[in-house]
Image 1: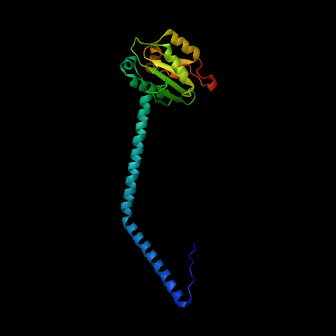
Image 2: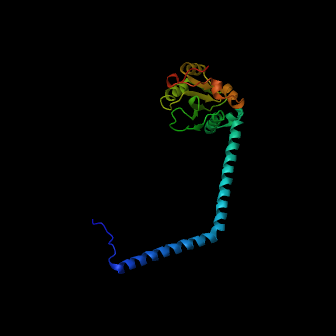
Image 3: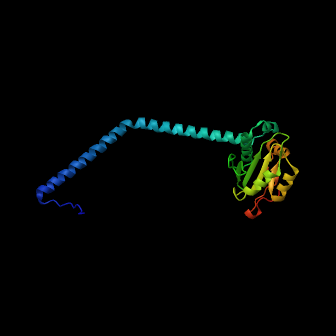
Length: 224
């Protein structure tokens, strides 16, 4: 494809014509700039008012968001849940409550329970202790959680969820075999008594269970 090349003007006539075109273009551009400057000079109070309005709205929204975060932080920090409240919950609300308690303890957490959860209802990522996987078992006050739940959590917490600690939490109790098997194999448990000390008494879960920072090789060590 041949390149378009500009030909130099030939003769005085073409030089004058080219100069006239350049001058006309410059005059047009200058007039456009003058017109734009005049319009801006006339409109600047409106533009300034709009800028101030946008800035004020933005500042108000930031302050509102900051206030909401502060209020939520204060609410979570003061969170206390009585055993009677747990007993009145359904499974989903129970899981959400356990998530909120982990957040209160300084452990960002999310509820993941549902179909295909692979023995994990809540997952928290503690900044110092690593990932904590919680299997929640909401039951009647007299209900007992058996060893099969502990087996399931042990099988998935590390390989599937990459957890540093696994905990089974119930508002009921656990069988003697379940508690013993869990302690032998590094699966922590929270029964009704421990739940009260955690949720109502304000103790942190990691302190209550004696959780410590450990390597992948030391995962699910027995609680102190």
